[in-house]
Amino acid sequence: MLSSVDEFIDVIQGNRVYIPCIYVYNKIDQISIEEVDRLARLPHHVVISCEMNLNMDYLLEKIWEYLALVRVYTKKPGSAPDLGPEDGIILRAGCTVEHCCHALHRTLASQFRYAIVWGTSTKFSPQRVGIHHKLDHEDVIQIVKK
Image (cartoon, rainbow, N blue to C red; front, top):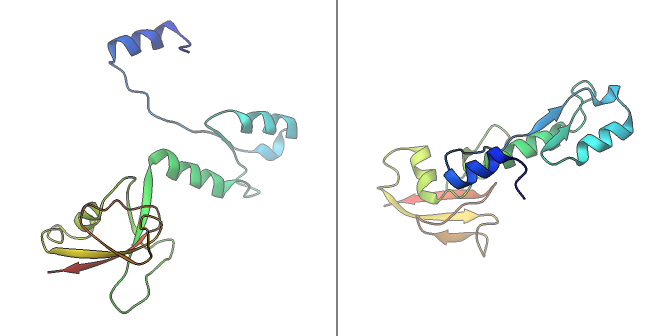
């Protein structure tokens, strides 16, 4: 149900785009538990305490979700993948192996032969895939060139 006349006009004309947002409340250690509970139950709201390091991981998870980002790790043949928090390629959700190739090097997609992927985007782990295969968050990819 539309809540205002402005929203109704926007739907009819289609001239505005609403972007997702997160409301972050800090210093939750200074208010009552009932108020924290009320704020946390609201949609698109995250309650944190930087001083006590509460809910920081949840906030980070929500930011990744709202920005629609995925992290893909690369692997060299014969070695283990680097799975550190600073390693990996950050791409948009729904990205393909081709997007990953372009992120690594501009000519890699033209030299692409196939890729081997470990992770949730494949039926088997590892699985040989083509350039149009969609990647999921925290997939590991090994690219084989011609």
